[in-house]
Image (cartoon, rainbow, N blue to C red):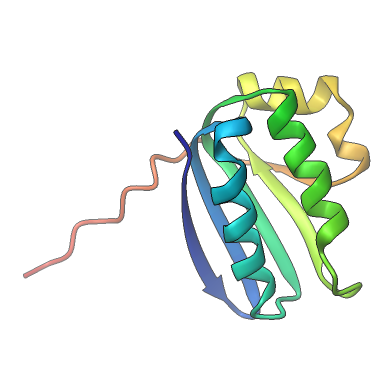
Length: 115
């Protein structure tokens, strides 16, 4: 199951994805993308560091996402860590469609707050 957390900073939107990007994630992914676009960001960053699985349906969602960004001034980029998802993106030449940044894995756990 896919989970998505949105972060907005400096007119950029980051969508932190975790879980599986497959056909079952279609509606959630498309809804999150539409929400991100509604803020008219300069860039939408799809953070895949916590995604464990992506299949052909997930790849199709990425391509569709790139095509549906309506603002020509809005960039879309991917953040990945080494591992399965990066290998799939490399094998399918997604680097030709997206700017891809390699970063260390994250667990998306917020830091503890002092009380």
